Length: 421
Image (cartoon, rainbow, N blue to C red):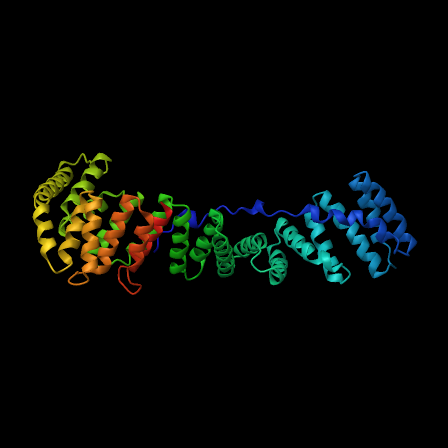
Protein backbone atom coordinates (compact mmCIF):
# COMPACT_ATOMS: atom_id res chain seq x y z
CA UNK A 1 0.00 0.00 0.00
CA UNK A 2 1.19 3.51 -0.77
CA UNK A 3 2.70 4.99 2.38
CA UNK A 4 1.01 8.35 2.50
CA UNK A 5 1.33 9.35 6.11
CA UNK A 6 -0.79 11.38 8.47
CA UNK A 7 -0.09 14.60 6.61
CA UNK A 8 -2.51 13.42 3.95
CA UNK A 9 -5.04 11.83 6.26
CA UNK A 10 -5.40 13.70 9.55
CA UNK A 11 -5.14 17.12 7.96
CA UNK A 12 -6.08 20.30 9.75
CA UNK A 13 -8.77 22.05 7.73
CA UNK A 14 -8.79 25.81 8.02
CA UNK A 15 -12.45 25.86 8.91
CA UNK A 16 -12.19 29.20 10.64
CA UNK A 17 -11.06 30.84 7.42
CA UNK A 18 -14.57 31.32 6.07
CA UNK A 19 -16.73 33.63 8.18
CA UNK A 20 -19.96 35.50 7.52
CA UNK A 21 -19.48 38.87 5.88
CA UNK A 22 -21.18 41.01 8.50
CA UNK A 23 -20.74 44.23 6.58
CA UNK A 24 -23.01 42.94 3.83
CA UNK A 25 -25.95 42.99 6.20
CA UNK A 26 -25.63 46.44 7.75
CA UNK A 27 -27.50 48.29 4.96
CA UNK A 28 -30.63 46.35 5.92
CA UNK A 29 -30.96 48.40 9.10
CA UNK A 30 -30.15 51.63 7.29
CA UNK A 31 -32.91 50.97 4.77
CA UNK A 32 -35.42 49.97 7.43
CA UNK A 33 -37.06 53.37 7.84
CA UNK A 34 -37.66 53.73 4.10
CA UNK A 35 -39.09 50.24 3.89
CA UNK A 36 -41.40 50.84 6.84
CA UNK A 37 -43.24 53.50 4.87
CA UNK A 38 -44.65 50.69 2.69
CA UNK A 39 -45.92 48.65 5.62
CA UNK A 40 -49.67 49.00 5.93
CA UNK A 41 -50.52 46.58 8.73
CA UNK A 42 -50.48 48.50 12.04
CA UNK A 43 -49.80 45.35 14.10
CA UNK A 44 -46.61 44.92 12.08
CA UNK A 45 -45.58 48.57 11.84
CA UNK A 46 -45.69 49.36 15.56
CA UNK A 47 -43.31 46.63 16.81
CA UNK A 48 -40.99 47.17 13.83
CA UNK A 49 -40.73 50.86 14.71
CA UNK A 50 -39.90 49.91 18.30
CA UNK A 51 -37.37 47.38 16.99
CA UNK A 52 -35.75 50.05 14.85
CA UNK A 53 -35.34 52.35 17.85
CA UNK A 54 -33.77 49.52 19.87
CA UNK A 55 -31.44 48.66 16.99
CA UNK A 56 -30.20 52.24 16.84
CA UNK A 57 -29.23 51.90 20.51
CA UNK A 58 -27.72 48.44 19.82
CA UNK A 59 -30.20 46.87 22.19
CA UNK A 60 -30.32 43.65 20.23
CA UNK A 61 -32.37 41.54 22.65
CA UNK A 62 -35.06 44.21 22.90
CA UNK A 63 -35.06 44.62 19.12
CA UNK A 64 -35.47 40.88 18.57
CA UNK A 65 -38.39 40.75 21.00
CA UNK A 66 -40.22 43.42 19.00
CA UNK A 67 -39.41 41.79 15.66
CA UNK A 68 -40.86 38.50 16.89
CA UNK A 69 -44.06 40.33 17.82
CA UNK A 70 -44.34 41.52 14.23
CA UNK A 71 -43.56 38.04 12.92
CA UNK A 72 -46.38 36.59 15.04
CA UNK A 73 -49.00 38.66 13.23
CA UNK A 74 -51.01 36.24 11.11
CA UNK A 75 -52.36 38.57 8.45
CA UNK A 76 -49.47 40.37 6.83
CA UNK A 77 -48.44 40.98 3.26
CA UNK A 78 -45.53 39.14 1.61
CA UNK A 79 -43.64 42.43 1.57
CA UNK A 80 -44.19 42.87 5.32
CA UNK A 81 -42.97 39.30 5.95
CA UNK A 82 -39.89 40.11 3.90
CA UNK A 83 -39.18 43.29 5.88
CA UNK A 84 -39.59 41.43 9.17
CA UNK A 85 -36.98 38.94 7.97
CA UNK A 86 -34.72 41.80 6.91
CA UNK A 87 -34.80 43.20 10.45
CA UNK A 88 -34.52 39.78 12.07
CA UNK A 89 -31.55 38.66 9.94
CA UNK A 90 -29.59 41.78 10.78
CA UNK A 91 -30.21 41.50 14.53
CA UNK A 92 -29.38 37.78 14.63
CA UNK A 93 -26.06 38.48 12.94
CA UNK A 94 -25.24 41.13 15.53
CA UNK A 95 -25.99 38.56 18.22
CA UNK A 96 -23.79 36.02 16.39
CA UNK A 97 -26.74 33.64 16.19
CA UNK A 98 -25.62 32.37 12.81
CA UNK A 99 -27.64 29.18 12.97
CA UNK A 100 -30.87 31.14 13.39
CA UNK A 101 -29.88 33.77 10.81
CA UNK A 102 -29.16 31.33 7.96
CA UNK A 103 -32.76 30.16 7.31
CA UNK A 104 -33.97 33.75 7.60
CA UNK A 105 -31.73 34.91 4.76
CA UNK A 106 -32.48 31.77 2.78
CA UNK A 107 -36.19 32.59 3.11
CA UNK A 108 -35.52 36.12 1.89
CA UNK A 109 -33.63 34.87 -1.16
CA UNK A 110 -36.41 32.43 -2.02
CA UNK A 111 -39.11 35.11 -1.60
CA UNK A 112 -38.44 36.77 -4.94
CA UNK A 113 -38.63 40.16 -3.23
CA UNK A 114 -34.95 40.76 -2.65
CA UNK A 115 -33.55 43.62 -4.75
CA UNK A 116 -31.45 42.24 -7.61
CA UNK A 117 -28.33 44.10 -6.50
CA UNK A 118 -28.42 42.29 -3.13
CA UNK A 119 -28.95 38.73 -4.37
CA UNK A 120 -25.31 37.87 -5.05
CA UNK A 121 -23.88 39.02 -1.76
CA UNK A 122 -26.76 37.52 0.24
CA UNK A 123 -26.23 34.21 -1.58
CA UNK A 124 -22.63 34.23 -0.43
CA UNK A 125 -23.70 35.17 3.10
CA UNK A 126 -26.15 32.26 3.30
CA UNK A 127 -23.43 29.83 2.20
CA UNK A 128 -21.09 31.24 4.84
CA UNK A 129 -23.73 31.10 7.57
CA UNK A 130 -24.59 27.48 6.88
CA UNK A 131 -20.92 26.61 6.84
CA UNK A 132 -20.48 28.37 10.16
CA UNK A 133 -23.27 26.27 11.67
CA UNK A 134 -21.75 23.10 10.13
CA UNK A 135 -24.67 22.43 7.81
CA UNK A 136 -22.32 21.49 4.99
CA UNK A 137 -25.07 20.20 2.69
CA UNK A 138 -26.77 23.59 2.55
CA UNK A 139 -23.41 25.39 2.52
CA UNK A 140 -22.55 23.40 -0.62
CA UNK A 141 -25.89 24.18 -2.26
CA UNK A 142 -25.55 27.93 -1.78
CA UNK A 143 -21.84 28.01 -2.61
CA UNK A 144 -22.65 26.29 -5.92
CA UNK A 145 -25.36 28.88 -6.61
CA UNK A 146 -22.74 31.59 -6.19
CA UNK A 147 -20.12 29.79 -8.28
CA UNK A 148 -22.62 29.16 -11.08
CA UNK A 149 -22.75 32.92 -11.57
CA UNK A 150 -19.18 33.71 -10.49
CA UNK A 151 -16.91 30.80 -11.50
CA UNK A 152 -13.45 30.53 -9.96
CA UNK A 153 -14.21 32.81 -6.99
CA UNK A 154 -11.56 31.77 -4.49
CA UNK A 155 -13.33 32.14 -1.15
CA UNK A 156 -16.47 30.35 -2.32
CA UNK A 157 -14.39 27.66 -4.00
CA UNK A 158 -12.61 27.04 -0.71
CA UNK A 159 -15.91 26.95 1.19
CA UNK A 160 -17.38 24.48 -1.30
CA UNK A 161 -14.28 22.28 -1.32
CA UNK A 162 -14.13 22.16 2.48
CA UNK A 163 -17.85 21.38 2.68
CA UNK A 164 -17.51 18.56 0.15
CA UNK A 165 -14.57 17.12 2.07
CA UNK A 166 -16.47 17.19 5.36
CA UNK A 167 -19.42 15.50 3.62
CA UNK A 168 -17.04 12.72 2.48
CA UNK A 169 -17.55 13.78 -1.14
CA UNK A 170 -13.87 13.27 -1.83
CA UNK A 171 -14.18 13.27 -5.62
CA UNK A 172 -15.96 16.62 -5.52
CA UNK A 173 -13.55 18.05 -2.95
CA UNK A 174 -10.52 17.01 -5.02
CA UNK A 175 -11.94 18.61 -8.16
CA UNK A 176 -13.03 21.82 -6.43
CA UNK A 177 -9.83 22.39 -4.47
CA UNK A 178 -7.64 21.42 -7.45
CA UNK A 179 -9.37 24.21 -9.35
CA UNK A 180 -8.69 26.65 -6.50
CA UNK A 181 -5.00 25.66 -6.55
CA UNK A 182 -4.73 25.98 -10.34
CA UNK A 183 -6.38 29.40 -10.35
CA UNK A 184 -3.90 30.63 -7.75
CA UNK A 185 -1.03 29.32 -9.87
CA UNK A 186 -2.42 31.00 -12.99
CA UNK A 187 -2.58 34.26 -11.06
CA UNK A 188 1.09 33.87 -10.12
CA UNK A 189 0.32 33.24 -6.44
CA UNK A 190 1.52 30.49 -4.14
CA UNK A 191 -1.37 28.14 -3.28
CA UNK A 192 -2.06 27.66 0.41
CA UNK A 193 -0.56 24.48 1.84
CA UNK A 194 -3.91 23.54 3.36
CA UNK A 195 -5.64 23.62 -0.04
CA UNK A 196 -3.17 21.12 -1.46
CA UNK A 197 -3.53 18.96 1.66
CA UNK A 198 -7.29 18.74 1.07
CA UNK A 199 -6.68 17.64 -2.55
CA UNK A 200 -4.11 15.06 -1.46
CA UNK A 201 -6.23 13.73 1.39
CA UNK A 202 -9.30 13.52 -0.86
CA UNK A 203 -7.47 11.34 -3.36
CA UNK A 204 -6.15 9.22 -0.50
CA UNK A 205 -9.62 8.66 0.99
CA UNK A 206 -11.32 7.78 -2.29
CA UNK A 207 -12.34 4.16 -2.68
CA UNK A 208 -10.37 2.93 -4.48
CA UNK A 209 -7.54 5.36 -3.81
CA UNK A 210 -6.49 7.53 -6.72
CA UNK A 211 -2.73 6.94 -6.61
CA UNK A 212 -2.08 9.09 -9.66
CA UNK A 213 -4.03 11.91 -8.02
CA UNK A 214 -2.04 11.51 -4.81
CA UNK A 215 1.19 11.65 -6.78
CA UNK A 216 0.15 14.78 -8.70
CA UNK A 217 -0.95 16.50 -5.47
CA UNK A 218 2.35 15.64 -3.82
CA UNK A 219 4.23 17.06 -6.81
CA UNK A 220 2.36 20.31 -6.38
CA UNK A 221 3.04 20.21 -2.64
CA UNK A 222 6.81 19.78 -2.93
CA UNK A 223 6.94 22.46 -5.60
CA UNK A 224 5.74 25.05 -3.08
CA UNK A 225 6.40 23.36 0.28
CA UNK A 226 9.46 21.10 -0.21
CA UNK A 227 9.39 19.53 3.23
CA UNK A 228 11.21 16.20 3.62
CA UNK A 229 8.03 14.39 4.71
CA UNK A 230 6.25 15.42 1.50
CA UNK A 231 9.21 14.35 -0.61
CA UNK A 232 9.39 11.05 1.26
CA UNK A 233 5.76 10.26 0.46
CA UNK A 234 6.14 11.33 -3.17
CA UNK A 235 9.29 9.32 -3.78
CA UNK A 236 7.81 6.29 -2.05
CA UNK A 237 5.09 6.27 -4.71
CA UNK A 238 7.39 6.67 -7.70
CA UNK A 239 10.20 4.40 -6.51
CA UNK A 240 7.78 1.50 -6.81
CA UNK A 241 7.61 2.14 -10.55
CA UNK A 242 11.39 2.05 -11.00
CA UNK A 243 12.64 -0.69 -13.31
CA UNK A 244 16.32 -1.62 -13.38
CA UNK A 245 19.34 -0.83 -11.25
CA UNK A 246 20.30 2.42 -12.97
CA UNK A 247 16.83 3.90 -12.50
CA UNK A 248 16.78 2.76 -8.87
CA UNK A 249 20.10 4.55 -8.43
CA UNK A 250 18.50 7.62 -10.00
CA UNK A 251 15.77 7.67 -7.37
CA UNK A 252 18.33 7.21 -4.61
CA UNK A 253 20.17 10.25 -5.95
CA UNK A 254 17.02 12.34 -5.72
CA UNK A 255 16.31 11.01 -2.22
CA UNK A 256 19.81 12.03 -1.20
CA UNK A 257 19.38 15.48 -2.73
CA UNK A 258 16.08 16.24 -0.94
CA UNK A 259 17.16 14.80 2.41
CA UNK A 260 15.05 11.64 2.58
CA UNK A 261 17.86 9.08 2.33
CA UNK A 262 17.83 7.84 5.92
CA UNK A 263 17.64 4.06 6.05
CA UNK A 264 20.94 2.16 6.36
CA UNK A 265 19.77 -0.36 3.78
CA UNK A 266 19.20 2.47 1.29
CA UNK A 267 22.69 3.88 1.89
CA UNK A 268 24.28 0.49 1.30
CA UNK A 269 22.20 -0.32 -1.78
CA UNK A 270 22.86 3.10 -3.31
CA UNK A 271 26.59 2.69 -2.79
CA UNK A 272 26.58 -0.77 -4.35
CA UNK A 273 24.53 0.40 -7.33
CA UNK A 274 26.92 3.34 -7.82
CA UNK A 275 29.89 0.98 -7.93
CA UNK A 276 28.07 -1.23 -10.45
CA UNK A 277 27.24 1.86 -12.54
CA UNK A 278 30.92 2.80 -12.78
CA UNK A 279 30.85 5.82 -10.44
CA UNK A 280 32.71 4.60 -7.34
CA UNK A 281 33.37 8.15 -6.23
CA UNK A 282 29.65 8.54 -5.63
CA UNK A 283 29.62 5.25 -3.68
CA UNK A 284 32.46 6.48 -1.48
CA UNK A 285 30.70 9.78 -0.83
CA UNK A 286 27.42 8.08 0.15
CA UNK A 287 29.07 5.55 2.46
CA UNK A 288 31.04 8.30 4.15
CA UNK A 289 27.90 10.40 4.54
CA UNK A 290 26.08 7.48 6.17
CA UNK A 291 28.93 6.89 8.59
CA UNK A 292 29.27 10.57 9.48
CA UNK A 293 25.53 10.72 10.15
CA UNK A 294 25.73 7.68 12.40
CA UNK A 295 23.38 5.68 10.18
CA UNK A 296 26.13 3.23 9.22
CA UNK A 297 27.38 2.71 12.75
CA UNK A 298 26.65 -0.58 14.46
CA UNK A 299 27.65 -2.32 17.68
CA UNK A 300 27.46 -5.57 15.74
CA UNK A 301 31.01 -6.16 14.52
CA UNK A 302 29.88 -8.28 11.58
CA UNK A 303 27.49 -5.59 10.38
CA UNK A 304 30.00 -2.79 10.89
CA UNK A 305 32.63 -4.83 9.11
CA UNK A 306 30.36 -5.05 6.08
CA UNK A 307 29.99 -1.26 6.01
CA UNK A 308 33.73 -0.71 6.40
CA UNK A 309 34.56 -3.16 3.60
CA UNK A 310 32.12 -1.48 1.21
CA UNK A 311 33.62 1.94 1.97
CA UNK A 312 37.13 0.59 1.45
CA UNK A 313 36.11 -1.02 -1.84
CA UNK A 314 34.50 2.20 -3.06
CA UNK A 315 37.52 4.29 -2.05
CA UNK A 316 39.95 1.94 -3.76
CA UNK A 317 37.98 1.92 -7.00
CA UNK A 318 37.47 5.68 -6.84
CA UNK A 319 41.23 6.25 -6.51
CA UNK A 320 41.83 4.11 -9.59
CA UNK A 321 38.98 5.74 -11.49
CA UNK A 322 40.13 9.26 -10.67
CA UNK A 323 43.65 8.49 -11.85
CA UNK A 324 42.26 7.41 -15.22
CA UNK A 325 40.09 10.50 -15.83
CA UNK A 326 42.68 12.29 -17.95
CA UNK A 327 43.04 9.22 -20.16
CA UNK A 328 39.27 8.88 -20.43
CA UNK A 329 38.99 12.57 -21.36
CA UNK A 330 41.53 12.11 -24.16
CA UNK A 331 39.68 9.07 -25.50
CA UNK A 332 36.34 10.89 -25.36
CA UNK A 333 37.80 13.85 -27.28
CA UNK A 334 38.87 11.56 -30.12
CA UNK A 335 35.72 9.42 -30.22
CA UNK A 336 33.01 9.91 -32.84
CA UNK A 337 30.48 8.44 -30.39
CA UNK A 338 28.87 10.52 -27.70
CA UNK A 339 28.88 7.80 -25.03
CA UNK A 340 32.51 8.24 -23.86
CA UNK A 341 31.83 11.93 -23.20
CA UNK A 342 28.60 11.10 -21.34
CA UNK A 343 30.39 8.52 -19.18
CA UNK A 344 33.16 11.03 -18.53
CA UNK A 345 30.63 13.68 -17.53
CA UNK A 346 28.91 11.28 -15.15
CA UNK A 347 32.27 10.45 -13.59
CA UNK A 348 33.11 14.14 -13.15
CA UNK A 349 29.66 14.66 -11.58
CA UNK A 350 30.30 11.89 -9.06
CA UNK A 351 33.44 13.72 -7.90
CA UNK A 352 31.68 17.09 -7.66
CA UNK A 353 33.49 18.59 -10.66
CA UNK A 354 30.34 20.18 -12.06
CA UNK A 355 31.87 22.47 -14.69
CA UNK A 356 33.75 19.60 -16.30
CA UNK A 357 30.67 17.38 -15.97
CA UNK A 358 28.48 19.91 -17.78
CA UNK A 359 30.97 20.36 -20.62
CA UNK A 360 31.44 16.61 -21.13
CA UNK A 361 27.73 15.79 -20.93
CA UNK A 362 26.83 18.59 -23.34
CA UNK A 363 29.42 17.33 -25.81
CA UNK A 364 28.21 13.73 -25.58
CA UNK A 365 24.54 14.65 -25.92
CA UNK A 366 25.13 17.05 -28.81
CA UNK A 367 27.11 14.41 -30.72
CA UNK A 368 23.78 12.69 -31.30
CA UNK A 369 25.15 9.22 -31.99
CA UNK A 370 26.28 6.29 -29.92
CA UNK A 371 24.82 7.46 -26.59
CA UNK A 372 23.55 4.43 -24.70
CA UNK A 373 20.63 6.28 -23.09
CA UNK A 374 20.12 9.91 -24.11
CA UNK A 375 17.37 10.44 -21.53
CA UNK A 376 19.55 9.29 -18.64
CA UNK A 377 22.29 11.56 -19.97
CA UNK A 378 19.92 14.53 -19.93
CA UNK A 379 19.02 13.78 -16.32
CA UNK A 380 22.72 13.71 -15.44
CA UNK A 381 23.17 17.06 -17.20
CA UNK A 382 20.21 18.52 -15.29
CA UNK A 383 21.68 17.30 -11.99
CA UNK A 384 25.00 18.94 -12.84
CA UNK A 385 23.31 22.25 -13.65
CA UNK A 386 21.30 22.04 -10.43
CA UNK A 387 24.45 21.46 -8.35
CA UNK A 388 25.88 24.51 -10.10
CA UNK A 389 22.82 26.52 -9.06
CA UNK A 390 21.64 27.06 -12.64
CA UNK A 391 17.99 26.12 -12.17
CA UNK A 392 16.66 27.24 -15.56
CA UNK A 393 19.26 25.22 -17.46
CA UNK A 394 18.59 22.27 -15.14
CA UNK A 395 14.86 22.36 -15.92
CA UNK A 396 15.59 22.54 -19.65
CA UNK A 397 17.71 19.41 -19.39
CA UNK A 398 15.11 17.53 -17.35
CA UNK A 399 12.35 18.63 -19.73
CA UNK A 400 14.39 17.31 -22.68
CA UNK A 401 13.61 13.76 -21.52
CA UNK A 402 10.99 12.27 -23.84
CA UNK A 403 7.44 12.00 -22.53
CA UNK A 404 7.26 8.32 -23.45
CA UNK A 405 10.63 7.53 -21.89
CA UNK A 406 10.96 5.16 -18.93
CA UNK A 407 12.92 8.01 -17.33
CA UNK A 408 10.10 10.54 -17.67
CA UNK A 409 8.75 10.23 -14.12
CA UNK A 410 12.19 10.69 -12.59
CA UNK A 411 12.97 13.62 -14.89
CA UNK A 412 9.65 15.22 -13.96
CA UNK A 413 10.46 14.90 -10.24
CA UNK A 414 13.90 16.41 -10.79
CA UNK A 415 12.23 19.30 -12.65
CA UNK A 416 9.96 19.83 -9.63
CA UNK A 417 13.04 19.75 -7.43
CA UNK A 418 14.68 22.40 -9.61
CA UNK A 419 11.63 24.62 -9.27
CA UNK A 420 11.36 24.17 -5.49
CA UNK A 421 15.01 24.89 -4.60
